[in-house]
Image 1: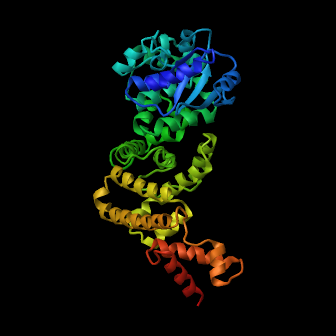
Image 2: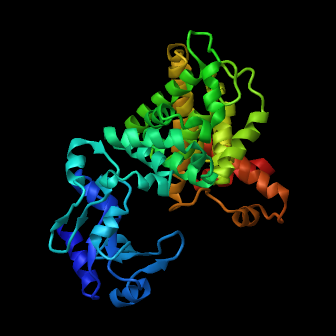
Image 3: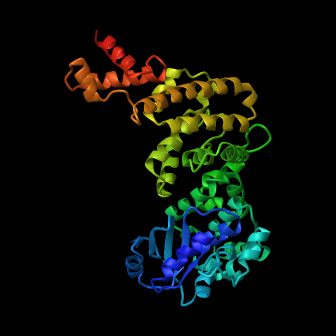
Length: 428
């Protein structure tokens, strides 16, 4: 805390009163070290503050301009006060656990009992003010995200007020732009995908942002449950993997779990039409998901079941080169999750373990190249190949480099001299 207070004092040397606020205070109260601190500044001129501290840039995107930078080795983002006082600012914040501030002298400003709620694991609207929801209905989704991620209980009055609002103003939810839905959903499923989606279902929100998932509740899975139940089970297994394997923010991994059975009538995906790739792409595009992530999501959904059969090292090499190491690793991890959710992990375990071993060897060999070349992914560049073999630029150079990659990944080449010899043999 002392280092953070020093940051506050640095800001206050500019003449602007400054507080630690929001997620920073909440995380410190929970014993979590923030990666970046959030500040509130009593100043209407961020540019003047930036010049006075000699650090930071003003980001004018979004409704509230922010000064971002680093002081005393601590990354920060600073916002102007909303209102005339810090109490006014805190009253504008969604939930009491975020409506706590710390002064530069270490004093606490907590007008809404946020620290009490943090200690008791309770999520409540700031000041029990339902007008906060009326001002921005997406706060409902944010509430469920916090409840899932922080494993908090929603305060009974907040729950009652939110459910009543949804009954009376459901059309307000339909007016929320798709990209805002997507941004909050993605944050919600990154760490607790199963818990988050179950909460969304409990509040009847699925029809607003993914009606095809809601429709799966009416599709039996042939085992006494529904396809929707199967999706929830996959998300539950993925959630466990996120913790055990420390998979951090791999959006394709969790999005494949959420969208994997959209358009299906059976668990095994045998009837799944590729037209639903277009449906998924449209959803994720509207949610403002990067195109690379969308490509990986579709690759996982359409290909993970082939990991239930043996995959040799050469095939893994080609896939790593075509997609990325991370994408192939995640696809294989997803196959394990799906097998567990399908109740068939015992049947496929040996094959999945062998495939994981083969991929591990391929990745180890590619990493060895980087170690030997101080970070390069290849022993030789195209220009070096042309010099070595006295070749002119052309398609053949690319083919040789691709072939060399496969030779490296399968263990046939493991050094620069071996790479040069391999190339000479191909043109002898």
